[in-house]
Length: 348
Image (cartoon, rainbow, N blue to C red):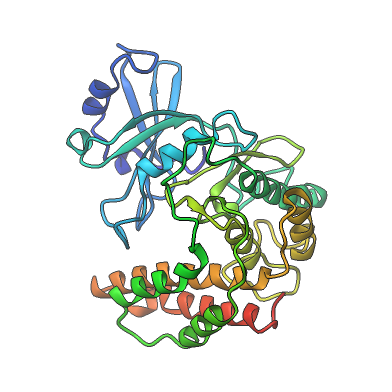
């Protein structure tokens, strides 16, 4: 894990947690220590590196404030991680789940510590300097996404996790309803993209597990070459539905050399990485799924992300954050602009 935060960021009741863990994990009797890792503000889940003696694990808990009650579902994450045990999808091993809010105020889970790095904004060496390793990374992201789409979710005990029947039909109404719960401004391009999505909805692909936010920010890469995934992380928005939404999300945010980024460039710059066409071809080859309607899923993914982040915009404005300091002022309209670009064929 990376991005260790100072001890001042630590807000975990270590004594209470240690009492609850007891002898469920090794090292009982040794002092439990905790260090905050990852993001420490906003809507991010709380992550802590916890240890007793030589034993180390990751503690994960949803934020106190969420855009939507269904977000950051720890029990959902536990179910998916448990279903992935024994599959070829790289993931953290789920160790303990506590859904009793009386213990620490919110549910939490404890999982194995992954040896690797998150390639969202930065790359360590040798990945930073070696362009062929960057190409491997791009294909590794697709590999993880494709493996996930091929998991037998029924055999994994995930029936009832989502409603695969009518999944695509529900997407625009579901996310528009969420936007309307907190929208306080006009959003150019919103009506255009929702109308296009409703008129151009394809037949859904065979149901599978959806990560829900699949990107380089939610995977961990093994620290040594070749470029390969050590784990896919952050499963709290996962469900059962159309897996093409995951590859659509990954490729919609993918920036090629010379392009204007939807959100940001690839870590280390865009050179060396495979193109969207190459990545889509690998996914189709690995899964056997039809990607002829890929622009639909790319547009839908950006519309969905815009709906989620508009909640962040509203919350920050209502908290008195000046618009010039509110990143979502421009980010949400930008997402809608690119969603319309994929819908209209201006971006492929």
